[in-house]
Image 1 (tube, rainbow, N blue to C red):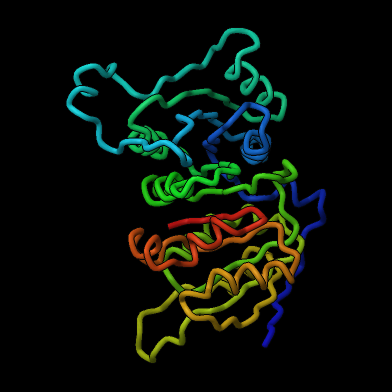
Image 2 (cartoon, rainbow, N blue to C red):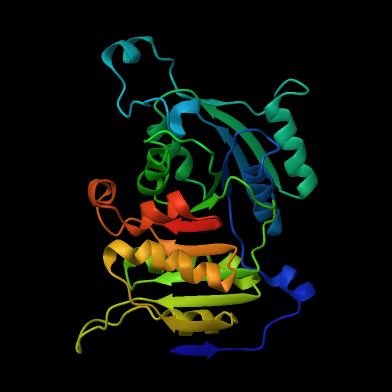
Length: 295
């Protein structure tokens, strides 16, 4: 069953001037000219927000173990801070290139930093004053390649826009699928993704939420919320087992020709997701399009 909710939507020209602000964007970069850099800078520039480019140790996204807790020897030899803030790089350096590109794009404030050790703690510090993380998946076949995304989603507390390894570096997504299961994480994802949903041409809500019993507390209703913000939505019911939810979501998104999937992340514990499988791990591993995820 499909339900369409439509409202008067601004023209493309008017839309650019009335989109809600994304806020301050933290970009996890492989290089200053990768897709994540372009997308993060454009999202920040949309409302003249700030953008921070951040490099991490190569092993964070698989292949090399990154310790979450420093050893005694590391504590004795570590510098005062593990986050190396480098605003003014030498000409031609990565930081200098990133800041120049961001200013050209229109971001009001651009920074560059590198986290050398204790990555989890460094990311938590940066997350306290950023609103969105943008990162691009890499073609890493290591068995722990997704663990870094676990840390981003579970450790920072802010939404993460995960770009596929190959993508067009645009800050606007035309066709967006929302995976809705009625959870708090899904609610937070929809609310935080509002700037991207407002810019989309077509939005499909895949409703897999269980029916609520009578007499429960008032709950968030995604369709009225999106309608209030002038977003046209088509709702379709989706029925899938917990183990098959991720595959079903991606298949429906493929048929819709979506270029972005919005969903809550880690409805179960990280251990259960890793051992038994789950929708979050499945879409992170198999999605050919961008993902907007929030825990």
